[in-house]
Image 1: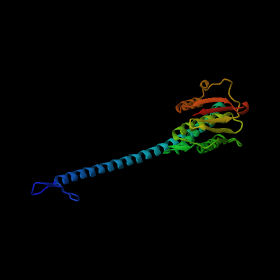
Image 2 (image 1 turned 45 degrees about the vertical axis):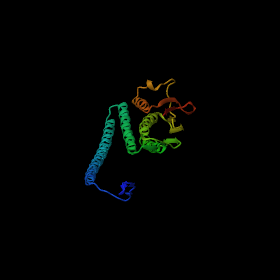
Image 3 (image 1 turned 180 degrees about the vertical axis):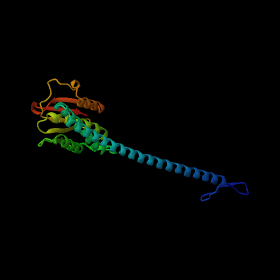
Length: 250
């Protein structure tokens, strides 16, 4: 408010006026300098983080390379040993071991392609995986195949990885006894009710067989992986009562 000579007051408009306090100007400069320093520190931290990520990626790639080479070396040693085994039984067991290690290597390479992916199209993934296994397990037998059936579906990669190892173990086991094709079926009734089945036409399992009764390493691996994903394992006779149907609900 302004004041006239007669001591009466009148309003004063300060629109557009700007008064700069030199002390305030100094505080602004200090804040700007602190902000600039903070941004520089943030940029340095970000660069260090990116460099650490690059180093971790290089180490992971080196580990992958060494692991694959190590598995190939083990397969070669087992194969050589099987040729010099003194009994057919020993030779057969060594050959089985070599094929198991080789299949693990193939599954590992296939799973490695899922790195940095949150989700995967499961049916396509199984097609590629089963093609790898078919070339390995049926290389001495013509006319055999692993057939994948079912609808396409996307699932989390964290779920696809253990399911991939489950499929590997079940197909490797079925290939020992199957007299024809091995069928891989995917069923999705809902987001929370999905299943994966491996069906073969082999001699089947004894009546009343329970997975917990099995002493084989493959079935123990399957049971452990099924527990890991919170799933359910069922073993039933195959189609028309022939062979075996192993189903994992997840």
